[in-house]
Image (cartoon, rainbow, N blue to C red; front, side):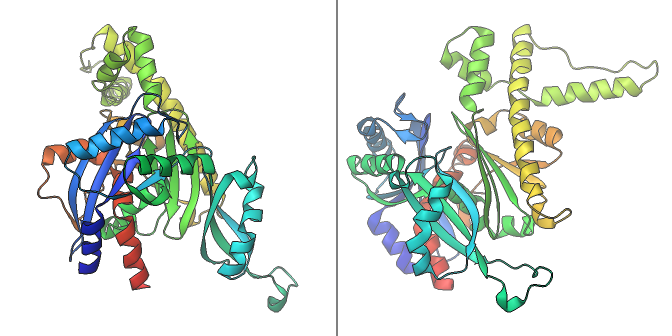
Length: 406
């Protein structure tokens, strides 16, 4: 552990989550008992500098990164960033069993089956998950059955990855790795948190990251990722809805969005339920809010309900990939992260609509994480939006720890 700590101090590795609305930076160091949060910060991303996950204005974003690090006293010379979005393909495929060297020679051919553009315009990565176990077909001899393996395949556009590397270079940072957001988020919320893993007891983890432009839904298990989905309903959709109802500026709509409380909808539903079962007894109701608040809440409810319908469809699709009743297909919990996950009462409302346990993701709710020197107020404010950045910040030390343990 001491050697990793020295490496981190010497290089100053940070995790950078470069979103289209905000950029988040986190610096973490390993300790003898776990991890220590060194620094965290966030700032607005330059307007229109990132579109559909691609940095289209590298210099502007690089300048913003330098300001963020300088103003928050980061000491960093290297960074790990991440990519996500519809063009990034993450899927589990079944292939004939072969060694890693042979797979490297054939993986681009296999990947070409899943991309609509030329595979030459993409980076391809993979991880061998293990052998496929299945009973032989009737009359089939074991020795004649082709052995197969499960492979996690990742394909990303060169344009997206190269723009991230270029931006970090302009910011004076070494690009140690460009990772898929799903992997970083899972690492922060589960892989590095033994308590969380034990509580989920091997059941699949569903995570919905509500960003500015998209909600990225991920379903994963301890054996690897099984589903990633990009849903174009997220923070900007909600803000545009508020703006349309109130006929106000974008900034005013953003502020008003933060005052909405979805628990009001649950209270009203419960009140109506009580009223329908009462005889002549009057049931007290919550006092109605202003006409503005009512109109905004109703409009946002429509958008959130549509988002949750898409989540439900994805959960059903995931479940359909397993035999009926299989515990591997049973998703019972959903973790919400990202800026819009902080809308009051959203987790409770989603739980009621989906029939699942829903909670806000907090990478620091981990007994192995030392955050004592960071204020509780800052942690409460930042925790739901920092999962990806934390997962990126610990990546190098975590991978090294796994390599040593293997």
